[in-house]
Length: 379
Image (spheres, rainbow, N blue to C red):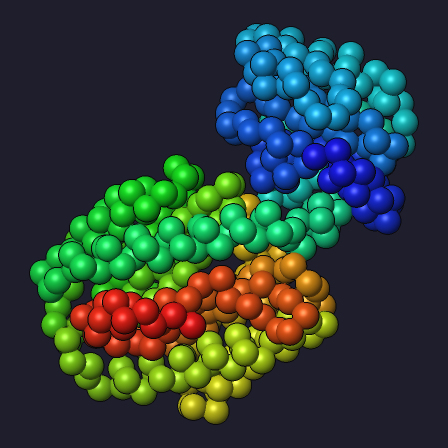
């Protein structure tokens, strides 16, 4: 943790920031090791470019900061909200009249915390500081990669055990519920990256469909997008299946998506622009005549959050660096018919992209998929 805070100081200076203000979430946990619930009592950590750390938190959370591996000023408050503003002003009195630039995470810091800080620091400018911490979090170390690989193993084992119970007549909700049970049996931590997406038939044409009471039928497609957590890190995987014999264009779009996934997964390289990885997958689908039905980016970063930088979208100039982890998840979605998505988690290494996920990617019947897994088909 001390090393991460020291590294952050350099990034704060590079971004022209005097302080970074964080509330409970992945970045706070990454930098300090502290875990807090986001609740009605505000928890704020302030990390300065000079190395100073201040944590303002409820008295009931004091035990969590009793043995920090770095120096920090600890300020606690009671349960009466009427006293909080005065406490913030007192804690930050030596900074209150300085024209500071304070970085915040726009998608994390709430009005509750920003209002307390603005009143206590009336001359401060609050700006987007997410890049400073993102630069640290994007490049995973070996311990982080080990945790993500284990999260992938857990998720894959849970899927295999769930598929053994799947049959026509089951609802999407029933399959999703079984998958949740199997995730925890396989060793996932309680906080999942997201609630599993289980869609069937025409619902598979909605990339972010929510499981419903709709029942799986013979001759349809089944799409499952799910993940697990281990050591505070996530996996995010999608596999698509035929329930019985495929009909219409099912096989055609399935093979195109398989090729698109392979093109990006095997073609991505260290130093390549993220947008070029997207292009590798997208060109396969465009050339196959279904470009208009690939309606989202090819992938997104993955780690302590299900979606984090880098983002793999067309035209993104972000350079791929060693240790970056992201998804590759091309898809084709034909409205009111069916859809296919195949998603893997990959890490950037010197030799290319190494996949942390290795279940068979071919779209096939569920029984054939399970048979392939039984034979040890991993890639």
